[in-house]
Image 1 (cartoon, rainbow, N blue to C red):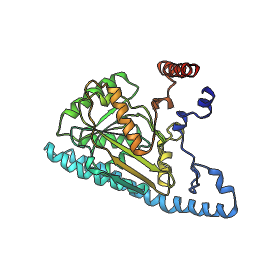
Image 2: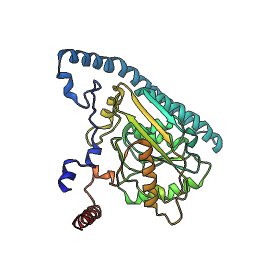
Image 3: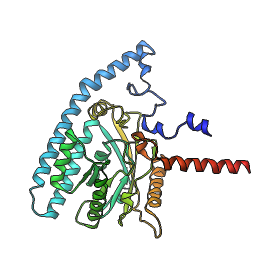
Image 4: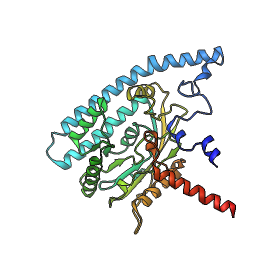
Length: 331
């Protein structure tokens, strides 16, 4: 069992892009294929020229228009003094702006069961593959965002969004921020006049083959949970962001030079915490439903293993499971 775990590690391979069974003329996976023959090299070169010299300039222009439109509109919405009017206008502005941004990487999105979309007072939770998950979900609904405080262009967009409605930004490595976020989440969920909250409980990007451990914070709040499963089709372009390998600028260049970003989004019925059910048990139940609907592998490991060493208690838990399985075999 130990040798099998080393050879086929089910955890760390979730932090790297999956190799495709068939090549899609992109050099991000199976890059050596364009050296196989002269004819294939010519086809790949034509595709390369088309993607970088035709698609990329058009998409970059669309992205700049979308960001400018979003920032201008959020500034104007922030000047509206009437709360209900501000929220209504922001809803339509937000959906329209993110739909423009989705065109910057030729998103082809299929939504299923949209009647289950998150409503005010609820928390929407989804598996996390890429920063563009936010754009994908905003094309169908408007949300209050909860996420890592970012520098650069993303930080500018975050501050612009804050002018128009309530969002929660934090530093995941600051203990004080964790208590602050928990309090803000509870206050936000209790206010039915605010937009539903969007959270990615994994806390990091996973390569769309599995769902890893959900942080329990958002499941401790007495509010309905609206699960969402997102499944991408990597044949046209793999949206997974390997943040340990690519910076955000390089990643966005890869997205805008892909053929397209194709995905399915399933809105699951709202789920509620059962009596005598702990927050961890509730989080695992929601995670299992998302994994089942999206055709993903359900893993209990923490996605922060991509950045941090394994916690001792997690090692002891696996040792205990292994010892129990050995006892059963001996019997």
